[in-house]
Image (cartoon, rainbow, N blue to C red; front, side):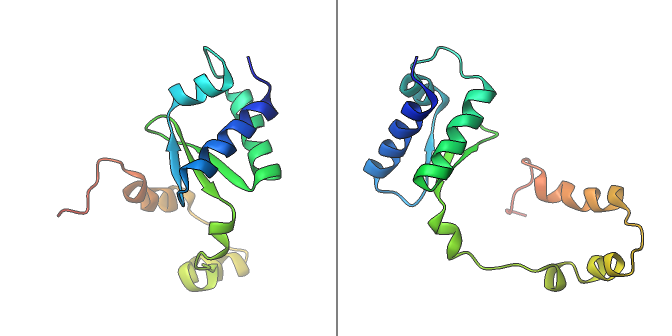
Length: 121
């Protein structure tokens, strides 16, 4: 079994050698690299922290299994979003200290988060 830092070093090296802007790592590869038969969530959290703090990489657990890896630098070029522009009605309610209907807001997100929805309509 490898330590957290050792696993993070190997994952960072794997990403570096792949020479990609973003990548996926399967759970099997993660297990092999870490030398573990089972990977506990606390171990993943610790590896994620080391990757972020020491190597500038974000490790994201994917719903489909495995992990995504993205360099923090890539986020610096991302387009900024503001509440004023994209939540104008909601930000007005927040500024007026009015209550928000989070059930309604969550319903609005259900279409966004539905993996069965496709853009082929």
